[in-house]
Image (cartoon, rainbow, N blue to C red; front, top):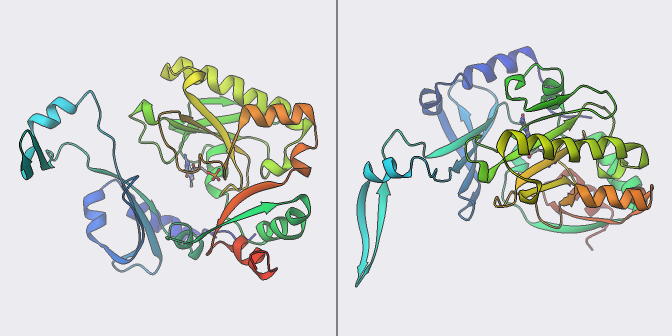
Amino acid sequence: MSGEGENDASQTKRMKYSDGEGSRVLKDFSVTKILKEDSKVKLMAIHGKFEGANDDAVLLLEKLPFASKTVNAMLTGSNLHETLKNDIYSTYEAVSPPSFPGYKTTMIYPATEKHIAKYSEQDVFVVHETKELYSMVTKPSLEQSSFSLQWVYNILEKKTESERIIHEDVDPETGFILLPDMKWDRKDVNSLYLVAIVNKHGVKSLRDLNKQCLPLLKNILNTGTKVIKEKFNIPDSKLRIYIHYQPSYYHLHVHFTHVKFDAPGSDVFRAHLLSSVIENIENNGDFYENKTLSFTLRENDNLFKKYNERGYFD
Ligand code: G7M
């Protein structure tokens, strides 16, 4: 796999640009290109560079949801500028006090071409991947080029994010680590987003799941929901528990999101409910080996290029 190679120098630089002194760090950032603007989910993806750095960076800016605990203090400290008044209706632009965080920032540094492509605005195409297309096009393509799994191994080896672990089951076959997804601000439980990363290596995606994986999948479903109830008081009736196909990272992991949160990638082209996955395999052990799986690809995806070269979209 080509992946995103890491070396000591890039790790040192990453430390430098993520040392917690956000304001100073972003002062040194200059925008190369706005990759994506999404006013619905209030997100902007920016490609840029830090002063004096050779490598590119991708910054994701997201507006944070309001918090019911602090909304009163926020309102009383805000300045309002009227933008419209009509009878009993008026609108304002509000400037909240500096102590209230305006947005969440995710930084990818050094960012590869694949990262820049991933966060760019792109045309989207639907693929119906048969068993044959998987083995002829998808599988060779992802073996050749997919995102590095270094961050996954860092979590499994407790090199990073160990203080965030919510639950760990050390069994090498059926165990996993449950921890907050990078997308969650870890404050608002209505937008809870956890990810369960399996200990076992080599299970790349939904396509690889079969009867042997049932104990692992059931353990993630049962233990994950139990732990979330205990730690966050969220019952399983409020959880969306699913696997992405195609995933971004080909080491099996399961998403746990709050149903109120319209999580990116929870649509029919990407999310497969874990409970349905288990049932399908129980009914037919080879279900995912044979099933035609539909997903979307974006024009800069390497996989899109492979399908396009074969004339799939003609
Ligand atoms: O699409 P896919 O199923 O591969 O989703 C991977 C999930 O992993 C996404 O929801 C990401 O937000 C999450 N994620 C990606 N990275 C690089 C990290 C990370 O470094 N830490 C954590 N906690 N989550 C991540």
